[in-house]
Each structure stands twice: as C-alpha cells, then as structure tokens.
Amino acid sequence: MGFAAAFLLLLLLAAPAAHAVQYTVGDSAGWTNSGDYEGWVQGKAFTVGDTLLFRYGGSHAVDVVSKNDYDNCNSGNALSSHSDGNTVIPLSNPGPMYFICPTIGHCAGGMKLAINVVAAGGNSPSTPSGSPTTPGTTPSGGSTPSPPSPRPSGAPSIMNSGFVLAFLAVLGAVLAVMS
Ligand SMILES: [Cu+2]
Image 1 (cartoon, helix red, strand yellow):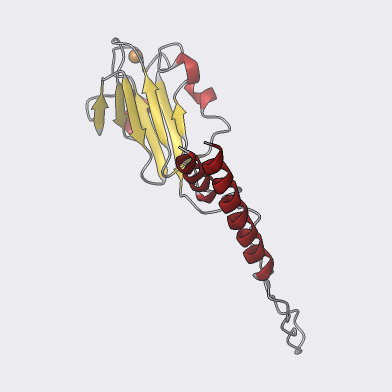
Image 2 (cartoon, rainbow, N blue to C red):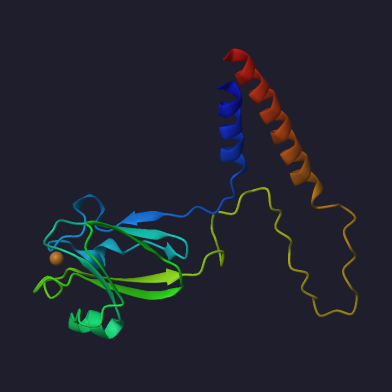
C-alpha cells in the first residue's frame, strides 16, 4: 500500500503537462433540444486529443455531419451516427467538426453544435517552469556577433528535478514505513 501510494504520487508528478480534456456537451444539461450550443462553445479551446461527451435521452441522437449538412440540418449523409445516449467523440484531427441531432425539428430548433479543433502542442500556455526560455539570438544588425554566454542554461532545471526526485524518494520511503 505504501509503495503503491508512493508510486502513484510519482506517476502523478512525473506526468507530462499535456492533459486531454473531456468536454460534456451542454455541461450538466447535456445534449437537449433546449440547449444553447453556440454559447456553450464560447471560450473553449478544443484540442486534438480531447473528447466530447454527448449525454442525451432516447428521443435524441448525434450525427457527425459536414458543414453543409450542419447548415441545412440534413442528417441524410451523416459521417457517423450515434444513439447510445452516452457518446464519446474523440477529436482526432484539427479543423472544424459539426454535430446535429437527426430527430425531426431538433436541429432546426438549435440542437446543433459546431466546433473548431486546434492542433495539440502548438502554443500550449501550460508549459511548466522547468523549461528555460531560450532567447532568440536575433542579430542586432551590427557585424559583431554576440558573445556566447558561458552560463549553462540547463543546470538549474536539472538541479530542480534532482531535488524533486530525491524528495519523492524520501516521501515514498516515509509512506512505505507509515503503512
Ligand atoms: Cu434531439
């Protein structure tokens, strides 16, 4: 138990900063014909690797459609259709994705969702502090090259990670002893 806890803690801390997000469409209200999905997408950054979860009752379904069919509420050419009530859609590729409910009148009433998926790792704002920002060595136009800095920029972060590992080892030992 102690080792398991320490191991889990180690995994947690060593996990990369990339975190896939599962978005529940419509949040707690789910996928319904009274939802405001244009409003729901506001402020969300859908990224490759994330997933959408559609939760809905038996009168609804989810069709993945083209933009044209989204605009026209046409479910006749759906790229994929889902009616299990608990549909997880992986966002595998960057670009727009379109979803409608194929039940008569629902899409026209607003039960439709359009999102834009962006590529992962482009400009992730959640870069950990361990990666030192290397300043771009832009030549200032003069003929004198900038002298190379003798200070190894990697040293502080290596020392930090060494400290964290040592701390984890001690913590794991303590947890193992305590249990
Ligand atoms: Cu519906």
